[in-house]
Image 1 (cartoon, helix red, strand yellow):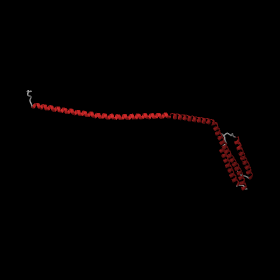
Image 2 (cartoon, helix red, strand yellow):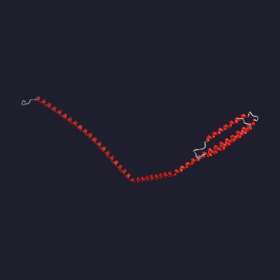
Image 3 (tube, helix red, strand yellow):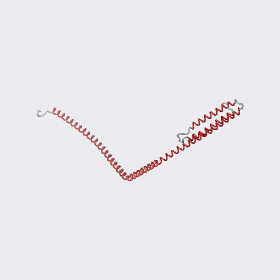
Image 4 (cartoon, helix red, strand yellow):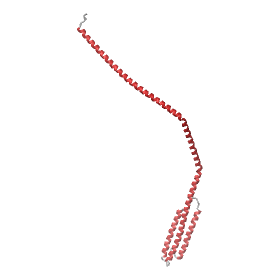
Length: 238
């Protein structure tokens, strides 16, 4: 496109008017949108549109600048193209700042909304928490009272438990004494049985020896008797 001084002014007027109209229309469109957080402005799409417009503005300036070199008043032509570019970039920058401000405002409103929602939920649950706390406190106090009652009962039963323990210890001591006595008697009886066995075996051995000696004396006497009868005949002939 060949940019002439007059045509550059016309282009400047048209493009700037379009950008200004876009700049004014976008906030109005955003205000027309519902304020519900489910449908916020598409800030990413708006930034992309601004970036595309900035690229298009720079491209048109480059084309106009190249066309200016074929004109007689080159510098004047280029200056006019720069003015157009500068004003359009200024409009785009203002639009970019407005998008940033709107996004920050929306995020702040969203944070406030979330905070208010959490606060409302907290306040709605406060009666239930209070009831739970009261029930927990009552349960704790009841358990404390039950424990105090058990402690009191144990304190009252302490003398009886001590007497029972003493009686048990006495019974255990008596039982141990009887067991020791029984073990001693058992050991004594075992020793006595062993001694009786030895005495019996000794008597049996002595009896056997006496019987053996007796048998030997009888045999010896019979032998002597027989010998005496053979050397001295009987006077009666028999």
